[in-house]
Amino acid sequence: MSLKSFYKLAGTVSCAALLAGCTGQGGMFPSFPENSTPEAALAGSSSATAGIPAPVIRQPVLPEYLVGCRGHVLVPALGMTFVAKNAPAPTSGQYLREERLTVPYRIIRPGDRLSQDRSTQRLNVELDAYGRVVGLACG
Image 1 (cartoon, helix red, strand yellow):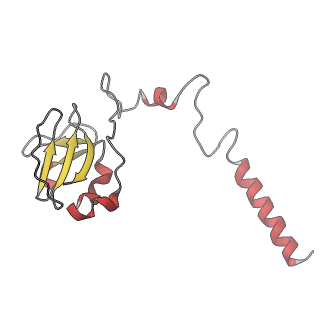
Image 2 (cartoon, rainbow, N blue to C red; image 1 turned 90 degrees about the vertical axis):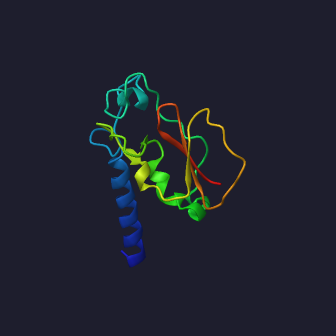
């Protein structure tokens, strides 16, 4: 057997072994019961609170567009609960404290009226009705 044939056979066997691990019992991905959805499986987890819908991120947030206002470091905070200055932290779940933001920034809550002044260095943090971060933008 030539070296080229050996490597080809080894590659085929490796791919077959990898694919075999992705199916059936002990697979790579979790299996859901029949007639079930991932959302239903999450319903019992601590991240889903009864009566509160999952956060809906308002627009696609691209970190490279947030570098000018230092918002690129906050992209992982999307969906987290926002905690105002000197307010107590929630007892469970992840949160973002206002004290961690660097000025200039603006917190935008539902129904807030916004001024028309724009600053490329200012970070706008948009919250939903439940106080979760759903948008980040410079301006």
